[in-house]
Image (tube, rainbow, N blue to C red; front, side, top):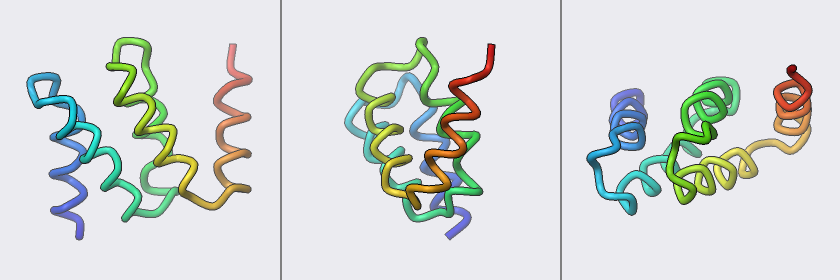
Length: 81
């Protein structure tokens, strides 16, 4: 499972990879735990420099995790100066 997730992270982050492949890779991160993926999804895939479709996939992936953990984590992230 670790190698599958590591490959997904690599494909999702590679700007040379076709956008549909990057989106599918971000969606594969749902197979991990929120604790393992929250920082990666927010920092790496919700940056303004990332393609909007990849950002959308990251938000959908975040939404697939336990709502209380996601809400708490995102509220902390959003409240940063």
